[in-house]
Image (cartoon, rainbow, N blue to C red; front, side, top):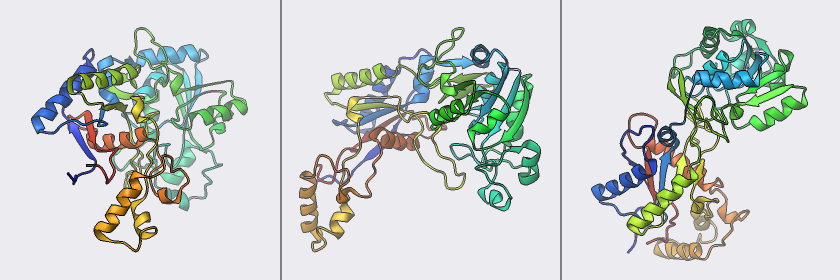
Length: 397
């Protein structure tokens, strides 16, 4: 029987998850309850995805600012650092900054301009165009920055992040100076000890700093890689991917997720006979056209997934076939010949013209982005996403 629906993404409601909850059991029971209650059946190669936030919460993977401070103080006993390229976020970075500031005596805070790594703007790009400034070379102190760009509040949050971060650091008893630059090496004119807070460019930044003469460089991914006074930790990503929990606590990116996804997969198979794929997901990749923000604050989209989600799509472009190879056909005849082409397509279409315009990203990045947009970040109450039909093509029945 012909199918009339392709990919479906469903938000699955779940209980409010607390520290110590069995996250695998909650995911399995929630999906099965939704299946029964909403009248849909699970199928082989469905994808069950659970947001990293509730996994980390169930694990109790939290840390206080005091625990962050103790780790930072141990790494920089001299008490003076340059902190560069933080993202501008009350949720993602402010509490981490408070912890770092508590661990040192003096900080030179270096912000990139006009925006941070993920698209949060200090001021509009057009304002930069009107200033006699080269953002690739010029280093601005706070006075020059204010003369050129004034006091600008973020259009969504209403926060002047320069003032907000500076005041936050000072409130922790830490002396602070703010500068603005886009070349990481500019910080070395102020201090040779650096914490680089960038996410996806962190390895390159660290390499450049060391080559330029930095004495000590520590990334956010190297802070809280092990427990400090009973804190949570993440051996791979440290503070990267953390979120505000309270004014004094962060929830860290979840760790040891592979056993969780494998257990969910096994229990679904035991209860339904269906071989599903499972993943934990964080930020996807959607750019807000107004706020200009990319949802890319997590170090990876998926920290763990079942083996069936490895790889990239291998798809042909339907409009290419319709406009080129089979331009002389239409209607049912066109549909039939394209369906036959799909059934016989090469197992690896990389570099082939027929695949141009398809999405060459990893499956986990694509599906994670879909899940992130489906679940939202507010009060939907759907931290579990069920994606069906993602691996189907137009020939599936």
